[in-house]
Every structure is written in structure tokens, then in C-alpha cells.
Length: 277
Image (spheres, rainbow, N blue to C red):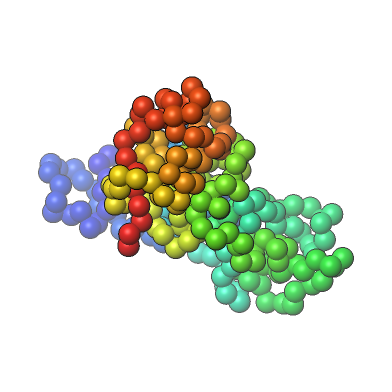
């Protein structure tokens, strides 16, 4: 079956195309894996965080859906049961600012955990008052599937980070995960997209796309991105970078030209990129 969205009608060669209109959807309460093919064994290409808007393009009849993320236009296959047609109606939207957090069944740390949250996940503020308990402030929320939950106000407060480099450093020791976009596990371009996005700088998903989106510069300064073949990191100064890498399977800090790994990075360096918008 040859599938394409309606906007491409008249632009594709050959016969037998079935055209579909994208339908708005959101990710459910858990992170949603986007895969390269409608197969659980295929590679994860990205993740959609809880509550993030998606476009449902079509379903294949076996439980898989072809989807596109709204914030960066990234395509992948996801389990259809991880999608919702819309988020709940409440008292406004909340964005998680903690690197990692949990939503609880009640306003107490001993209550059951309902789901894992991460920086950038979206919740709905439920109607009701903040509850204070043992000097903690609990905010009533609705998870994307509409279930009542409670999140500590600290996980929703303004970030203390002054720039993208400082935020990137907070991810040090986070496990490396191909296609990951959260502090539960991320890849190199997932880290850079996440920290730039937290400061209102929308980057594409992949390293080569990010390289094309930024202005090339000869000398790096703090907050610039550094590019290698198929890899990207955030510069802390003109020589030091923080990056999610499969060499150490975690987020780590390296100095260009220093040590065996630093020497390899220096030799492979292709360019620095700067946000100038």
C-alpha cells in the first residue's frame, strides 16, 4: 500500500497512492517510542514525551500507527494504543521542568507512582487547591489520559539554569539510549535538542539537521554545538564539551585533544554551530 498525506496530492509520481489527512493526537501518560518500522524489534528513532502533540497519519491494522511529532516534524511508527485523540480539559497546561519526576496517586511521597515524567512532559492543571504536606507543596494535575494525579511543585518550578551549557551539565551520567529524548535515557542529538528547546530554541531532531540549522563558526564559545560525523555535543568553553555518547554509554564531559577519546574527537571534528536567530 502506497500511503501519503493529502498535502502531497498531485506531487507524487505513479499510481495507486492512498491519500490521508493527518489527525491531531497526543502522547499518553508514558514516553512513546517512535520506531523505524512497525515492528517492536526495529530501531527506536525518537521518543515523544507524555502529553506532546502528534499527528496521526494512518494505522496499519496491526496495532501500529504512522505518526509525526508536531514540535519537530519527525516521522516514526508507534503503538497506536500509546496515542490519545486529545488531552484532558482542565485549568491550563503545565510543563515539567525537573530532569526526572514522578506523578503520584495522592499528595504524599509514600503514595503509588502512576507514571514517570521528564523535562518537557506536558500535564494539565486540575481544578483544586495545592496541598501542603510536611513542608512540601503538591499540585493536582491530570495526566494526558485524564487520570487524576499529584506532582510536587518543585518538579514544575522555574529552572535554575542560566544557559544551555549549565542545563546540559545536569544530564551528566544519564544513560545513553538510541533515540532517547529524556533524562531516563537519551542520545547525542536528543540531549542538544532538549536543552536548546528548554530555552525556546527549537532544533531539528538529528545531528546533521541541527548542523544545517545553525550558523557555522570557526571558534567555539559556551553554548555552541560541536559536530562530528553522526554526532553532536554542547560546548562548555572553547575546548570542553558535554555529550551523550555510546563510547561510555552515558552523558560525559570531554576535552578536545585530551586523552585517547579527546584526541579522536578532535580528529573527527567537522564544525561548530551557533544559534543566531
